Image (cartoon, rainbow, N blue to C red):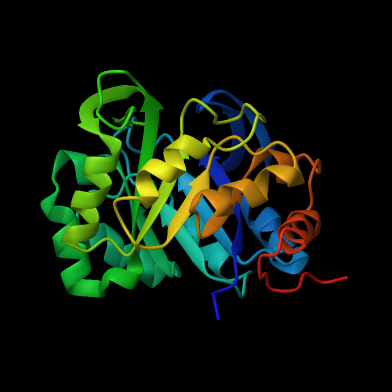
Amino acid sequence: MSLAVRVIACLDVDGGRVVKGVGFTDLRDSGDPVEMARSYDGAGADEIVVLDITASADARETTYDVVRRTAEQVTIPLTVGGGVRVVADVDLLLRAGADKVSVGTAAVTRPDLVDEVADRFGSQVLVVSVDARRTPRSPSGFEVTTHGGRRPTGLDAADWIRHVCERGAGEVLLNSMDADGSGAGFDLELIVAVREVTTVPLVASGGAGAAAHFPPAIAAGADAVLAAGIFHRGEVSIRAAKAALRAAGHRVRPAPP
């Protein structure tokens, strides 16, 4: 029997507050991360992802206090990312209550970090986050960017993801910078391109604007779907997202009535 599709609520955090914009720019305050995480837990989300979206660009650490307080309020798995540079950062986040840790920019800067984290804590702890943009220069049509999508790397997204999975990544958080915040739907071509090169769990991110957008992402090859703005603004509920997935024939964990 196939595993249940996960519906994940993402909290993009800047300065201790949840924010949302388009492509990680024009950020607007959306609320307190601890309160929002608790609310999503109660609403039936399968996981919470907390991303400190300016930590790498600002060359600072993730806010451990936010992680600690959030972990105390939720019973579902918590993934944390942003500003992770060395194995010690992962250790601190796990001690603060994270179940999984996401690395993005640091993995590009020093790929050995992927091996080091996987070797010490296990692949199940390590999520590699990839912010991809469309470009005709890359064989797959997508290029890896870093620092919240601000810097192109010249790395082909599909090749890079194959590489980090071979090094020990246990999950890939795949975010389309072109679709992020657009509400136009997930970039299905990006999901297909990545699914062809790896079998590790794949989380689709960027572009959800309606409950109807979630099933096509799973059909394209994602194992989980992640959204932020539409959940924060109340445009789509966790329950509605799961209902759309169930109606399309996908297994989901029940959401509370």
